[in-house]
Length: 319
Image 1 (cartoon, one colour):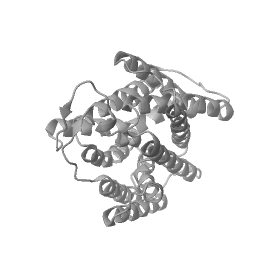
Image 2: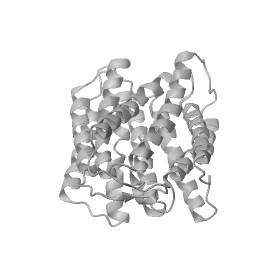
Image 3: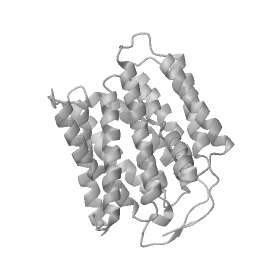
């Protein structure tokens, strides 16, 4: 799931109704977050399926186009203007650039590395945000966050060292690309925190990321991929629809609704489940090897995500 959604506080929302945010995640909220993280984790398997017939960057392009169209329709349905006509539009272009480069790296890296490893590496973005916020936003790292960062980096080392027995020589390239994707994701989140959080409706942050990423991804596809389509069958079509309609649009929209009801800090703790589901999906559906290094590294990264995101949320009012 997009970490930048964590920055969309209830104050930034402009709902026409006013309601009190619950001070804890109840059974319903827990169930929804488990389903969302399951969808996000399984998404890495669907990316692998789609690249069996389509080039990876072109696949990302299709995903963004379909999700953007649905997002525009939703935005119009709630009578929100599609774009701002001030400096916020320029900021939207910047996060679209980060978002586009993130997904170019993510999808391209999936050619070289496994879905399980990618799911762990991409979710290093909270640590990029933690370090960046410490250096550029004045959000000091406390002891828990520092320990969490150390755990995460140790986990990355274990994953790199624990390659499966039958791995390709270029797996390291895929791993690096997924880490670069996590860095771009973190940069997008930091930029949103700095320039857009509290200044735009969350649907605009969502739209700007998708819409303005389209030309970036398209240019990369033209430059990097001479052949976009090798074959199209029902598996390819279903995987594209899953990535665009279910994940990029529907799951983000559900998250958008969730942050109006539950404390964002408490919801974000659940993100540690996404790489777990990603690893399990890769093992069960793609028969990827779960090495000791991968599993121990996964535990370290998940513990780090939990420690980085955990915060005691206070009851608040959403508008």
